[in-house]
Length: 238
Image 1: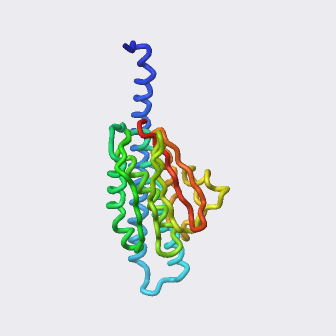
Image 2: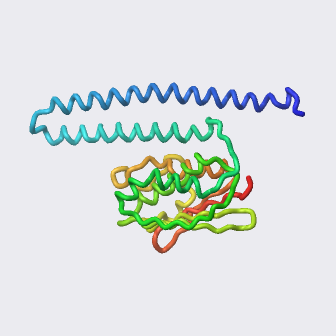
C-alpha cells in the first residue's frame, strides 16, 4: 500500500496540471475576447467603406482579416494541444475500428467536397486506449491528407498486425514531404508552406504524435513515389 509520502508527488502533479489548465482557460478567454473585438470592428469598417473602395484599403483590410482568422485558429489549436496534457483521460479496452469510423463520419463533409477516394482496410483489433483521443489522431492525419492533395485526394488506410503491435498506415497521393523534414513536421507550428498556399497552423501532426505517445506508441513518415505514408505503431496492450 502506498503511503502519504510516496503519493505526494502524484498529487502535486495533479494540482500543477489543474493550475496549468486554469491558466490556459483564463488566457484563452482574454484572447478570444480581443479577437472578437477585432473581427467586430473590421466588419464595421467594411460597412463604412464607399461603394468603390480604394484597392489598397481593401488589400490591407484583407490582410488584417486573414491575420485575425489565423490567430483564432492558432488559439483554438493551442487549446486543443494543451488539453491532451491537462484533461483527465480514461483508457479502456476498445476496438480500433471505432475511432476510425467516427473520424470518417466527422470528415464526411470535407471528404465529399474534395471528392476524395478513401480506401480502408482495418480489422477490429482490440487495444487499450482512449477512443476520443484516437479519433482525434485519425482526424488530424486525414485532414492533412485532404489539405495537401495534388488534385483529387486518394487516401489508403491499411494495417499490419504484428506480435505485440498494430501498425496503421495512412497513405496519400499528395505533394509529399522532403526526407529532411520527416521528423521536424511533428514539431508544434512547423509548416513547410505559406499560409495562403495551404491553410493550417502546423499542429495536426503534433497533436497526433502526442496522442500516439500517450498510448505508448510511435509515429513516423515514409516517402512514396506518390506522396507520403504516416505510420503508427500501437501496442496491442499498453
